[in-house]
Structure formats: C-alpha cells, structure tokens
Length: 115
Length: 111
Image (cartoon, rainbow over all chains, first blue to last red; front, side, top):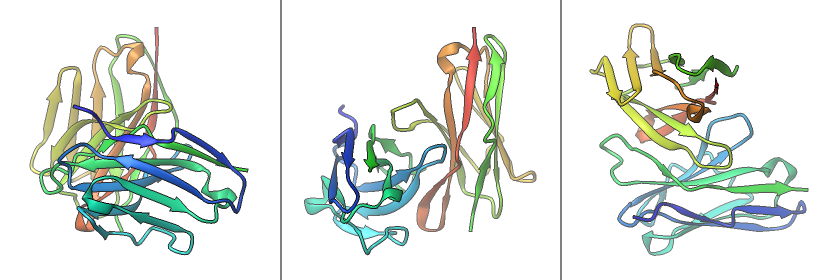
C-alpha cells in the first residue's frame, strides 16, 4: 500500500513569491491534515479536511494561506505571498478513522526555505 | 488549552540500556496518548497508542505507560540499539480530535 505522497520535497523561494504544496493521502483515508513543523518543534495543525470539507482551520493564517481538497482526495496548500517566517517543513497526514485513535500517517514533508 | 511537554534535551544512552522518555500533559486527561518516531528529513511514524483506561501497552521492545494521576506518559525502549536513535514525539487529542504534539525528545544510542 502506498503511503502519503507529498511534493515537492524541497522548495526554495524568495519572499513575496507564491508557493504550493501537493499531497496525495492513503487511498480510503477520508481525513486529511496539513501541519507545519518548525525546527526543534512538533507538528502544528494548520487545517483538517473531512472529505472535501475544511474543518479545524483556526490555525491557518488566512490572509496568505489557502488550501483545497477537490473531490475529497488530493489536497494543495498554497502560500501567497511567502514571508521569511514561513520557512518550515509542511507535513501532510491522513487517517483512516478519526474516532478510533486518530492514528496519523504522515508524508515525508516539503521543506520550504524563504530567502 | 492542552499542552504537551517533552524534555527538549537530548537523551544519550549506551547500547543495550533501557531508554525512558517522558511526556507530560497540563490539563484534562486525554482519551488516549500516541507516540511517534521521527527520523531526520522524514515525517513522523506512529508507534503506539495507549488509552486512558490502560496502564501499560507493549510492542516488541517498546513499552508505554499512562499515569492519569501524574498526568504523564512514559515511553521505554529496552535493549536499545543505535538504530533506535531518532526523535520521539508524544501526541494527544484536544477538542474535536485535534492532534496536539509535543516538541519531541531526541534519543541518541551510542554503540
């Protein structure tokens, strides 16, 4: 079974440029999460999707971040414009059953460097 | 809001010894606690889940305990190996099953 796939693995951009990350969750996993992980810290939730519906997006900086999950499968996370403080690893995770322990299956992440 | 606290200092141990990592939560007892392993450049990988009504959970060389009185979970690796070197993250659900992660503790097992 394929795991959670994220691309690109690395992205270097200049500040004020836009950037997008893509995630393909494990087949059959209806719940999808986007996290941001700063160096030396644990993942912090940005947004959670239940199928196509975005829920728990209170931590998403909506002035510059946006996300979508069309057809309830793949998801993209966009930043426009990027700021220096956005440099971090962006992780995508999916879970098969949110109510039975909510075990998170993570992708390898996208490491973003904003110069 | 719930906070997860893990020791930010790296734990250095000799191969063959038991590693013990600590996870403390600050408020109400969560329904369960999870432990994940994260290697450099990789996403976290789920290891174990322990529920509020369970005292202990084991999986091969891994053992997790959950003490609601102390508001603490301990994660043990017995007969540690250099390959166990990684960062170990503790996580628990907050409202609406929102996962909250600790910052993780780095474990370094010396041969």
